[in-house]
Length: 399
Ligand code: PMP
Image 1 (cartoon, helix red, strand yellow):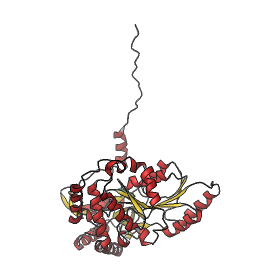
Image 2 (tube, protein in one colour; image 1 turned 180 degrees about the horizontal axis):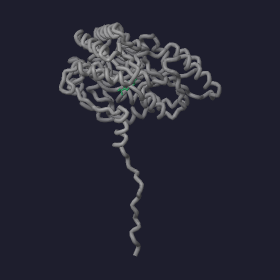
Image 3 (tube, protein in one colour; image 1 turned 135 degrees about the vertical axis):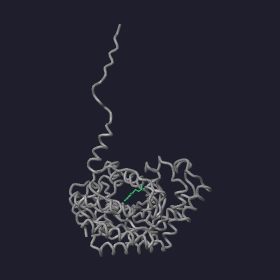
Image 4 (cartoon, helix red, strand yellow; image 1 turned 120 degrees about the vertical axis):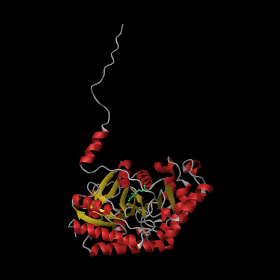
């Protein structure tokens, strides 16, 4: 009789996730979730009232009654979910209306909604199927993942450095085949540094080499000219081939968009897998962002945001902090990781939530606190934030 020859393997093909988490813990890199009562500029976290200077809800519209009403009306009129991908039965007039509004703001033929900014970047870069991608070294993870998915040769150039891009383009052009498709990709506003890509110089280089440009306006959408982004501020709508953005920051809900020519949008409707194989954006998100965009276009909210940004930038600067960038995001540079972690803790003790950003998210020696003011921070909130920074900074000998 045959004996049962099954052997127990001495190998372990499992996953030791606990060990990975412990390593993170040891290096101070373990992250945990921390629920807040709501997404207002002042909210309850950990059973205490706190001022939040950490959100991308820059115009404070995610809790605005007009936007909330628009979300509920869309749910009532259209549905709580789209029920299918847009190419099946998930396409509604409401989706088209927001796409038209966004196209008007972005000065393009059309726009196309995706289920997130992440999905828009990944799906669009992969669908364009470039041979070579020239990518800023600090581009967002969704751009990096798009480059990986596209399986293109990726050439990384120095951050916001058009001269470095020029060198890489020239050097790669030495052995380029004529029919290669080249794509230059960059964030417009870099959210950890608060700086802005040199778009005009990038467009000139793209024209010189016959490359296409794709820019990510995630942190700029809604905050500049007529609710547009940096591309509109710089008058470059006609020079950029693909503008990507998100509805999840200033536009107060969830979802991404791509703006460009009619042909580009038709192509993506057919080829972008994160569009084709994903359910259409939920109507409440579409309705909310449509109203948020109208409010952003009106300008009053934008004015309040920029006023708060100026007051905070000047205040932090005047007590001796070094504030980076030139946008609404204010990264306070500290350098050493321990200083940044301790300052984060002291700010929290004073009920100010502004997150520490440290390696590996940013290079060694450049740890920082990222302060993101909102249009809805009251004067008292701004003062409280400044005084917390001043007290903690003096106690710790940072200023
Ligand atoms: N691009 C950039 C530059 C971002 O910062 C983010 C979100 N943090 C995204 C894309 C992704 O957008 P979403 O959150 O809508 O997926």
